[in-house]
Image 1 (cartoon, helix red, strand yellow):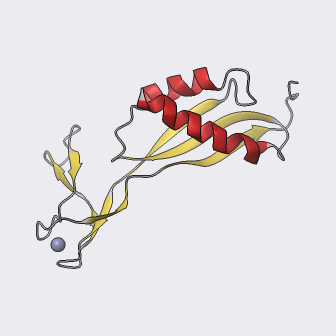
Image 2 (image 1 turned 180 degrees about the vertical axis):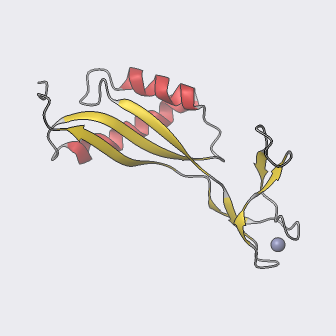
Length: 128
Ligand SMILES: [Zn+2]
C-alpha cells in the first residue's frame, strides 16, 4: 500500500529530529493535502505498525486535512480549487481547473504531506 511508503518516509525523517528532545512522544500531527489520495485510516494503521520498536511506538498519529488552493495564470484567480459536487456535498472532490474562467491552474496547496508538530510528555520515563 502506498500509505506504508509515505509513513515510512515520514518516520525516517522524524526520528533523527527527535534525537535531541527527550521524553515520550505522545502525538504526531501531520498535515495532508486533500489532493493526496491517501486514506487517513491506512496512514494511522501504517504508523502503528511501522513505529513498533522505535521511539514513536504507542504515539498517536493525527491527520489534519489541508484544503486545495490554486492560482490561475489566465485570469489571476487565487483561492480554493473548484469542486465536483454541490455546495456542502460531503463527497465533493477538488478539480484542477479555475473556478472563475475554467483554465487549468497551478496548485498552491493541497499536495503536501508533512509532520506539523509532535507533542512530548517529559514526565514519562523514556524507555530504553
Ligand atoms: Zn482563471
